[in-house]
Image (cartoon, rainbow over all chains, first blue to last red; front, side, top):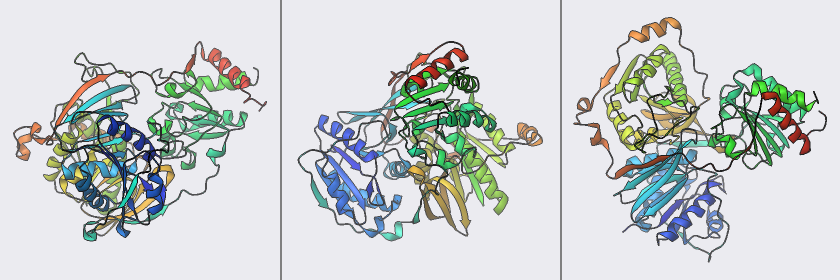
Length: 325
Length: 264
């Protein structure tokens, strides 16, 4: 009978990616509670060091597939590698991260292998052979528990910045290199390379004070308020995704999973609702002040201080008050 | 180039929500719905490709009658035909089933390319596109931020974390999930809005794809919504209250007390 948890580690350009350690933390918990093993699979080219790194965490096995066709992630290449591992390990849960790789790989696999997929989970548990997951929906305001049963195994992706990353420790997992024949003709996607973001006008990750603009500022002209406050506090202007999508500010100013991760000493969120994509990039800032019209906005769960109000009224009043007016 | 754009109508996530008495959905009778933001970018990208390469754009959704409003907006913004698979589950939490139904309907429409948004604003599952590609048996690329057609090949940029972009090639026919910010979606001109209000919308029923009922398209496993509820807050900010000027004064004091004010 299938049992235990298989993690598909995420690596890019020779580095283990953040959510992998979060998956190990949650995967360890689920595997131990269900009496199964925790296996981590890693795919790539020249990954001995990465496999060694993973073995320092509390996992039972590290299985590495090293092949030139796996240098970059492709859904067709990774599916062949994962098939080899799944046939060997027979896991009940295949765990991935809800990242751009997880978005691309997990649903394709679910369709091709006719398996249930629970994506973007903030919690999961096994009840015998049944899977129960929790997801947050509708801008974090609603939680939903979903039950999946009767499948030989389940694919689960977990949301980044939800679980505390695993610390090192454990007995030193065995590393096994798994040989593979990859059918290159089946790999339709060709990866030509990775482009880095262009050098930014300002490095927001180096700033002590960030005043960030979100959708709540309404229109581009209102950015001036945010810029003025940033200048008064000797800080820089950051933004949530809708602002850079609309090209009101350059991409280099975007805070969040798809932009920059910042740890400012002071972070003032102006009209930002606090979607996970944004929060993942700023939640570790020292002092977070949020201004938003929606009292139910999730940003208030992460902020230390909150103001329910319109930034267009609050910001001018705040600047006046700072000047002692 | 014939392009199909899959769209979803979602409740505006800025609203407040309540749990329905059933405990397995939210109260929906008073909700405002709008088009999923990611799908607007997918539609715009399709219309731009059509303007460059000729062909036709068909928009399709899986959902109840109310979704026709969204399809009419898409027609006004440059889509040529609109199709609705009449699936009445208002929550549509079973994404496997939604993707299967969409795929069955898409198979009935000639196409070279299928576009969806990366995810939907309400659930952020990011499943439907890549899953559909599996059911259709065509290659897919997710989180696309740039599309170039080179004969039967596609040269694409896909977004990774931290601002990195991966450049990939794939082959037509293909399915792409489109990332927000790839373009600046257009507004519909008034005459087009008027025309779209009267345009026909083709309805696809299970019988049209050779099925008895949509429930035929569930996976080989059990799926159940166990519970919908208001989550406990992870934390709570200390809230300032009063008029905007009063709240602003308290924030100013806080900034000064914490040493962030250096008389800028």
